[in-house]
Amino acid sequence: MSVGYPNLPCPNCGGDCETTGIPCVQSNPCLKTWDRRSSEGCRVYLAPYDGTLTPPLTDAEMTDVDAWMSLIDNETKEAPYIRCFTAVGDLPLPTKNTFEYKSEEIVIDKTYQYNWDIIDVNPVNFDFLREISCGLNAWFAWATDGGSLFGWSLATIDGDVELLRGANSLETFKFTSTWTEKCVIPRYDDPFQA
Image (cartoon, rainbow, N blue to C red; front, side):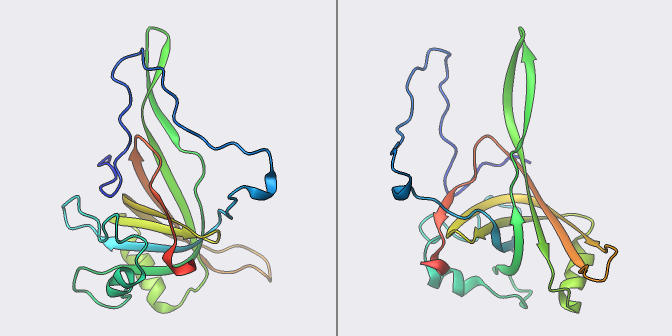
């Protein structure tokens, strides 16, 4: 389901094929001065989808710790709230949804899938896994070890349990968050790592 990112809309692509502008970039040959960030996910945030296209936090609130803390609650059933999970995650390249026109491939949009694992397999988290195993539409955001915060997207959340062989294997709850959009999800500086 493609709804656009309510906090930070996708840029408008040129309406004609004559657009020649190229966005600004910063290119510095000195590697030591680059803004490099670890990309492994460390936290996942879910908020209930209430049928509107209004995420739980506005663009201005995404870097406000107090705004986050006022909504993070892993126990309440009264919306609005945000669930917070300690998780390990990754976002591979999206699948491009295309069609061909006059021998040219046209990209309509892209399907993104964030993969995240929980190894804290306590009974509450197991109940959560079982309840959403049929798929859940929710607002989704995540943070990385490198200090980035991505969100919000309206995603379908799915989960399952992985049980592997071996004395050192861990019971793992594996989740996917899937959404379709025309552009990359907005990125912010994670207020919890500032």
